Amino acid sequence: MARKGGNLVDRFADKVALGLGAAALLAVIGFFFVSSPYKSPEGKAPTEVCEAVAQEADRARQAVVQKRPQPSQTSPVGGLLDQWFGNDSSTGLLANAGLPADARYALPWPLPLVDVVGTSEEDRHDLARLLPPEKPVVKAGRSTFRLPVPVVPGSRASESESAGPETTLAWANVVAQIDLLEQGRRFRAQRYGSGMYYLPIVEVQLQRRPADVPQAAWEEVGGWRPYAPLEVPAVEFTAADRLTPESQEALDAFRKILRRYADEIGRPKLPAAQSGDPVVYPEAPWIWGDPVMEEEQAAADALAGAGGSFSAQREALRGREPKEQRRYKKWLRQAELEMRSSGDRAPNLDLAAILLEAALGVEGVDDKSKARERWTELQRRRRESGLPEIRRETFRRPEKMMPIQASDTEVVPGQAYVYRMRYAILNHYVGQPAELRRRADARRVLLYSDWSEPSAPVEVWTDVLFQLTAVNAEKRTATVNVYRWASRQWNVKRFTVEVGEEIGGSPRGGRQRGVDFSTGVVVVDVIPEAGETGGRLVYCLKSDTRLNERYVNLDRDHPKYTRLVTRKVAGGT
Image (tube, rainbow, N blue to C red; front, side, top):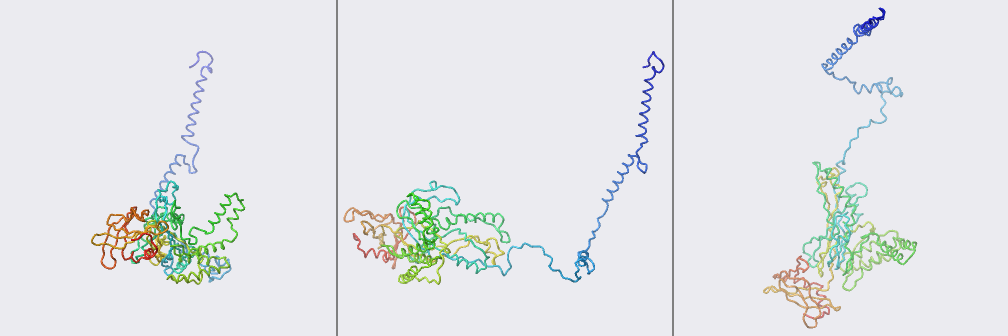
């Protein structure tokens, strides 16, 4: 607003300044935004340059999209080699090295490595047959046990948790040896690969039959074991007869179980008896490990209990003689015991042969003259007993004879049996058809050995026996003689029984009033038969449901009852 007072300059100065500022602003807008001082060499303003770049980029994109691919041009390998090495002596590496153009390479070019599983056709082989166990040896008895309940291998069930109630059982412990050196020769004969082959035993099978009936069929024996029977994994194969990855994994885990529990599988051990006969085994070499360690440990424990010094205990564990000498003496001593007879017990010449050979085969012992004398005596006694001689050019090393063991707890006291054994292992070449001539062999998960030859007869001693003497076809009754050991002698009494009755009993009077002739045997059936058999008796024990048979002709001619009849037997028939 113009001032009313003052001179002219004062009155219009502010309006002049405002006008000058507006003119300057219009000049700047015109210079920078209308005429623009920044231009390209071609005289284009920034907006024009941006527009030209956008148009060129769009043309380049269209050219790339519409361009057809051209075939690549590469130099041949030969050309590259000529370039690198030279095709004459004047170019390339040959010229630099001073070599003539026709010089051959010192080393061939390395070929790509191809992973091939398997062998050539001529290197394939058959599966080697497993060596059968040698003739088994048996010890028998009758004891009262608290048998543990079978558990899965690897479980942590304690003995008190798994022990069952007391039970009285007759038992037979059967042991046989496997010749590892001979089995190794069989493997090499079939061109197995070099190295140590482990025999992963999956099962030891046991069969028996009555010793008095050679024509009887072999009966499968379940065999007592402290573990649940192992279940072999159900495996699957590919079209090429190889294991599927899942089956291979399951089989590897199963193989670890076999390795960890090899002793429990191949040599299950009965618990100690609560009463009755002590549990004994045929002491084949290495059946429970080093045969002298138990004696050494017992001596050291005795010294420790008596307050002996640590050095004395260590000396007891170490022994004064070399271990080889002590093993020789122990096996020789056991062999001499088995060659003796004691009362009704006959010498065990089969077990004596095993022990004597172990003594003669142990290395590191210079003087074996006594064992050689016993070996000569043993062969003479075997000939006299009707047993075949055992001929040896050299005696086998005991540590190369692997023992296997099985226990039969379904023995009927007073009956004689013979046993045979075989074993099954995991096939080393399962799922590896390229190694074998017959592809079907790669699908065999288990391999079985042949059966051993039968053992010598063995019988569980009992203080009560019965003999079938006659069968009445009309009345369907059987006549039996019951023998009872009492007052250090055998007593005998005759009984006539029919189906459903128990054989034996206690006399009410007479000289045998205090003798108990009870047998615990119940008659199931009486079967008359024509001819020389004279009939048979079917029976079972009161504590067992398994059926057994007795024949008149076999009992009448049996050497056991013949010996009883010819002895001085108290009572009479």
